[in-house]
Image 1 (cartoon, rainbow, N blue to C red):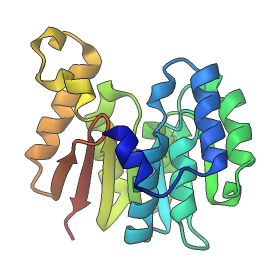
Image 2: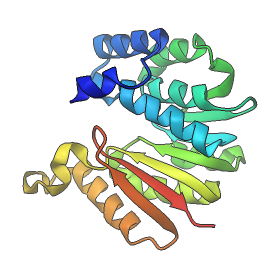
Image 3: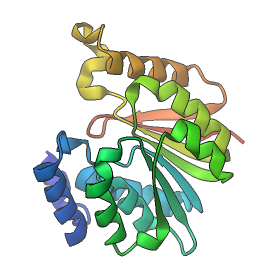
Image 4: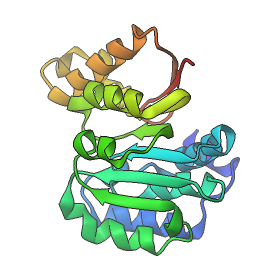
Length: 207
């Protein structure tokens, strides 16, 4: 089914394909990169929402940042935060070598601390960082994204672990379950979970 879908959507561009390959060859847990289908969805959502400023928490290899930047109008910016400084040597050259480098600001640091210091109002946020602190990251994003804006959260089905009792003591699974429960009961937003890859939650902040 995944092959069928990939054959019936816009193709992955050569640069992102090479980034995907390099990510899987050179980094542990390469599957964490968004990849073709999710990358195309992120790009299309950006074209639909037309944000000026996007906050991304969790850059990893830069695939999602580049995908979102490809959908931005002129003057738009993706501010992407990666807390793991060991990834910088891999990720920064790929971002700076992309055709949308001027639309991406890559920052090494803790987004929970550093993003509020930017003084930027965001129209959209993409959460893909530490699952153990998803609720805290979500609350931070709610303060920075304008009313009427959107928050996207990745990995919210976590390979099905959210409904698997074997993972009741796994900190990341527990973090995602806590996040899902928190968002489900949050009257400030409307939300839907898409069963895409590992689960993608779309959240609209009510005006």
